[in-house]
Image 1 (cartoon, rainbow, N blue to C red):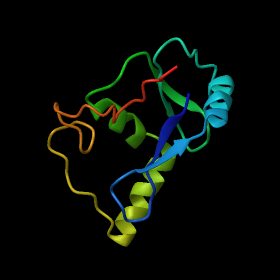
Image 2: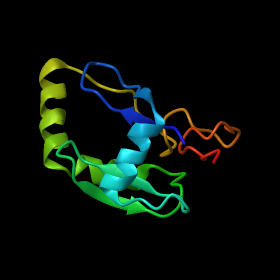
Image 3: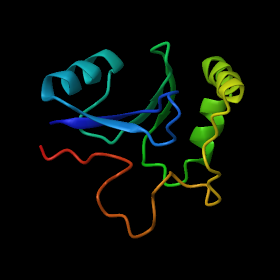
Length: 115
């Protein structure tokens, strides 16, 4: 099975960068993070490599994820740096994942394995 990972860079862009992961990388991540391939798992992994949160089902409202990330020390440092350089993402009034709508059917928030 392959998968995707999303990076939220501090480069002036508000959109995450998506990267496709090979089957070998996915298997390595599963082994390292002890993810069972029989069940859905959504993990929030900090820049330090530690798992910060583990969700057994998709999160359609990302507000709690954003709050968790914003509470992390490295994110707070990024926010200060963003303020210094005047980087500001547009406000998202819906409280849902950027770009997600009820009509979205492409599995944007999670990847369903075809295995």
